[in-house]
Image (cartoon, rainbow, N blue to C red; front, side, top):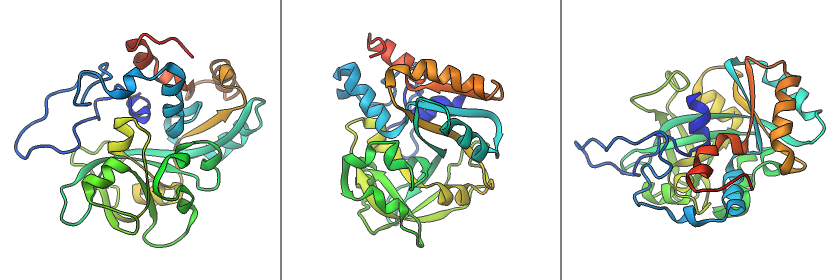
Length: 271
C-alpha cells in the first residue's frame, strides 16, 4: 500500500530535493533506496544507533497503525475497540496526504501533511518535545485560519515564521486521496526539528478536523495510530489487534514492520 510506505516518509519515492530547478526534471528515485533524495551518499541519521533512530521515527509516527483497504468511515468504532485492548496506551485517528505548500513570494514546496487529534497527540507522539518555535499545543487552539506546525527546514525555505499564513493545495499529480482537496490557508503555529532530513524538510501537522475539511472526503480517517505500554510487545500486539478486528479489510502493522527495509539497509535488527 503506497500510503503505508509514504506515511513513514522512509524509502519512499515522494522524497525529493526541497527545491527543483525550473525546467529540469529530477532524477528518478528508487523506491527501496532509503537515501533517495537525501542529497548525500549517507545522511547523518544513518549513523544513529537503532534505538535513537527508532525514537526519531516514533516521534512523528506511533508504535502501531491500523489501516483499511477501503474508505475508513467507521474509524470511531475501531478507535473505541483498540483503546480497550490490553497493552494499548493511547490511540488517535489520523489523516495523511501529500500536498503542496506555498507562502506568498516563494516557490511552492512539497508537503506531507498529517492530521492529528490535538486532544490526544501529545500522549502519542514526541515531536512536541522537539519544537524550535511556537508550541505543538497550539494545534488545539480553534480559529481561522487553522494552525499548522512545520518542519523547521521547510519553514525556512518558505520564509515562514510563527504567525505567517501559508497556502496548502493539491499537487498537480494528486492521487485519489487529495484529488479535489480545497486550497486552504493555514497559520504557522510552530516549527520542529527531528534531526531527520525528510521530516524536517517536508512534514507538517494540522488538526484532524481541519485536515478532513481540506481534503473534502467527509468524516473519514486514513487510519488509527497508537502507542503501547511496552514497545517490545508491538509486533505481537499488532497481530492481536488485527485478529480482534477480523483481518481484512483492516491491516495492523507495527513501527518496525513499516521500516524494515530501512533498518535492513543499515544492518540493524529490531532494537
